Length: 250
Image (tube, rainbow, N blue to C red; front, top):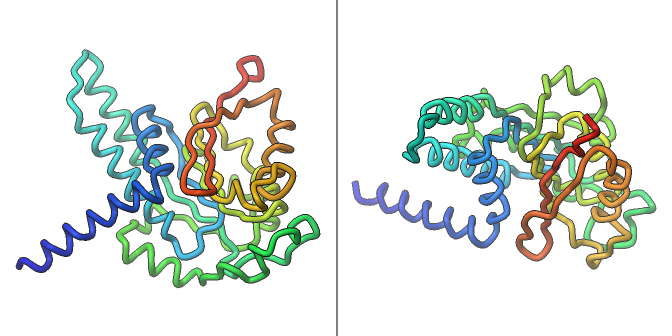
């Protein structure tokens, strides 16, 4: 009887440690979304074996449950609790990945030795096995198999019944792949959407290559529609932004 209890305690300690050391950017984003009631889906581009995907479900579930359980008083407390519960109920977890690893590198992505074709391959079956074992409910999950240049297309919005994004975790690694994802995102953005870039400081941190280059080019294209405010940094390479619509662009 004692062993299962000890295993549970150890798992929670490991989870808390991971949140602090590796997942703090996701933990804070999850709390922001739960507190601010950002209605939308969690969408991850580049899921590999599903660790971040699993963490996102656990953290968001925890933060929504925690916030709903708080007794803050006020005449609108019950209404806010009901709305926050609905936001969580409606949230889906969407995984975009080739499940074959990285694509053939274009000329723009050959200046770093960090990435090669086929790197980070994990089959769709293995991904599903891992997230199921971790307790992510299948009814909340949608998976999209294929390289981003093939799947991040206009027909995907209706096919997947995509609505708004609450959190976007972008682990595309490459300049070209990041561009494909960013060009796909505008219809899903709203006030409060958090964009998390896993490889922001790859390519020796150069703003002229990789993820940073893709984002800066895209940000320039979006300047009359959205402002992207720096939010949190994490580990040695991650960066996040909060999206806000330019008021006269509606």
